[in-house]
Image 1 (cartoon, rainbow, N blue to C red):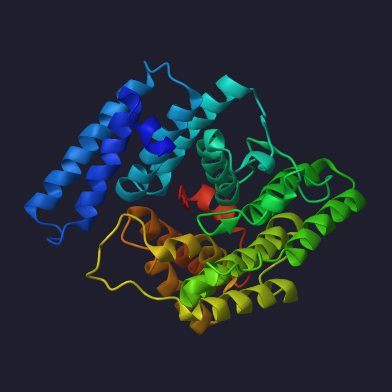
Image 2 (image 1 turned 135 degrees about the vertical axis):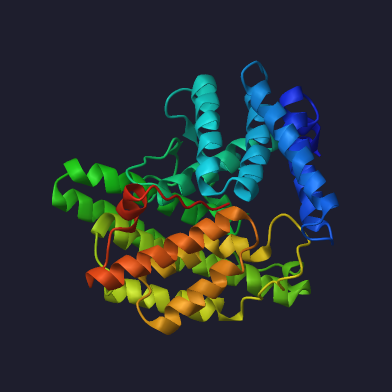
Amino acid sequence: MRTGDVAASHDLTRAASMAMVLLYRARSHPGGGDAAQQLLIKQSDHYFQQAVMHLETASIPLEAQLVAMADMQLHQFDQAGAAGTYAILLVGEFFVREALGKTPRLDYATILDPSTVSLWAFAYADVLRTVCLPRQRCLFDFAGMPGAPPSPGAEHQNFTHIGLPVGLLLCFAASSNLSIDSLSMPPDQVRAKAGAIEEAIRDWRPALPDAGALLDSSAYVDTTTTQEMWRQAALIYLYQSVYRVGCLSLVIQSALRQILRLGARQIVQPADDVSGAVYAGSVRGCPWFLAATVAVLPDDREHCRQALEACGPQRVYRDNLDAAERIWEVTDTAGWAVDWKDLMEKEGRFIAFL
């Protein structure tokens, strides 16, 4: 109940929470585009604008600020698309640095502490920001990064948020940071650090199931499948961002094949079923997008296209699919793989994930 209590504690958090509640109701409305649904969306936008105004005057604890940021980011995911989410993340980054310093230390020994839930959720969003945008370093200094001494809380490396275990989150974070550092580092040092990241990705294993997890075998298989898709996506991202190899790399193609096989049983949400603001398929959105950036064969691209469409009706997922199709178009025209981050920046496109 702690997050709910925080959400009701200040004008900023109440307005942000109401914006998401009303948007959720609009998405759950059976009318699909009728006047009642449009009224709910209009009311949601009104509360979002109230939250924006409270940002300028709110003097509240960081935890409450980040809870509001999460609700506002989800609102922008739906209504404004990928570009709108980054304005919210910038505000959240300002709040974090104002409270904790320029590069705050974050140790996953604290990941189960109720007082740090909102901070860890923001850390996830920040790492995914570095995956989506060019030349971005992580805001946080994570303990237990690949190649560094293990964190005292190493037993929590299987803690999962949005389908992504924290142990793999750190691999994405390390790859993003190294992609920047490598420009000024000796090649041997880059290879050593990249090797440590790759070893961490390949050695990562899902937690052994307990009796409770096996009560619903289908849910357990879906959870494990999602985690494995993230692991293969981490390999693709490392090879793209640090090794800077093209889509025909044997490692990249092997990871692509794994994602395609793992995701083949993904349940596609019926087009007329809009129950819920976030779809189950959305937790696989990033792995599917990274797979799409290296997909060359028509059948592979079609599988990625269908999976990205199945993430949900929110505008951000349309942005992601449009970006993937543009990458394919430019690749086919040029005859070789393109740096998709540079392409997105050049054309003013944005992608984003939960």
